[in-house]
Length: 66
Image (cartoon, rainbow, N blue to C red; front, side):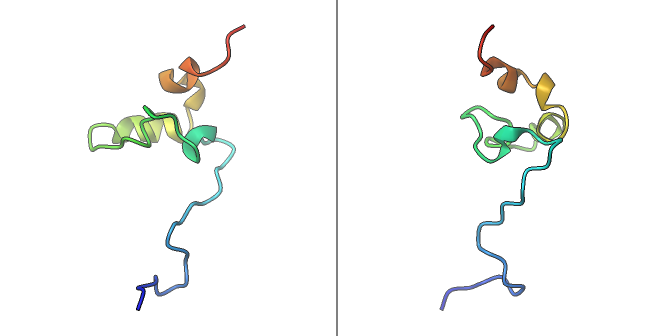
């Protein structure tokens, strides 16, 4: 018997990305803070992935050049 959450949620809970969140949260780069989260990187995840992704060095490094 497979264990299911009691409230009927799917096993993989992925809420919709909000407009203020980094668009890469659903498909992160290999070195994204949210993908390799540790206790030391939590402040970076909160700061960059939640509302300041336009300032994130990882996000900016992947933008196409001029």
